[in-house]
Length: 181
Image (cartoon, rainbow, N blue to C red):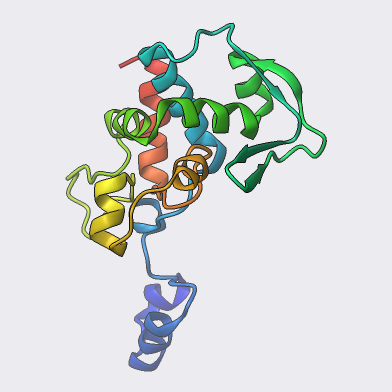
C-alpha cells in the first residue's frame, strides 16, 4: 500500500502484476475458492425442502461413505456415530452430507445454492467481480466434455470438487440464511 501512496513505478507495477499470489486482485469479489463446510447448510436446506430428510433424520457416520468402489472419508477419523441434521451441521459431518447428496442428486442443491446467491455476479458496480461456479451436469459437459458422476455429487456436497465461491457470495449466502430472506 505504501508504494501506491507515493506513486508506483513501472518496474514495481510489472512485478505486482506478474506475482503468482495476485496481490492486486480484489479477492473479496474476484477470488474464487471452494466454500468447504459452509456449503453444507445449503445441501441440508435443499434436502429439507425436497422432503429428502427431516430435522430428526439421522445417518450413521463410520468415518466414511462408499459409492461404488470409491470411499469418501469424513474429516473425523473413526466417524461421528449416529447424527441427525442439527448434529451434522454442528459437527460438520461429511458423511451425513455425502449420504443426503447421494439421495438427492446435484440439481436440487445446485438450485438452492443459486437461490442463496452463489454462482452469480451481483452487478454492484465493482469491476472484476467473478461469478464463482455452482456446477451441474450441463456445466461439466460444457466445460470438460465429460458426464457428471455420482462422485462429483458427493465431492460438491461438502463445498469441494468443482464448487467455487467468492467471499462476497459467502457473505450474501450467510446473510440470506440468517435473515430468512
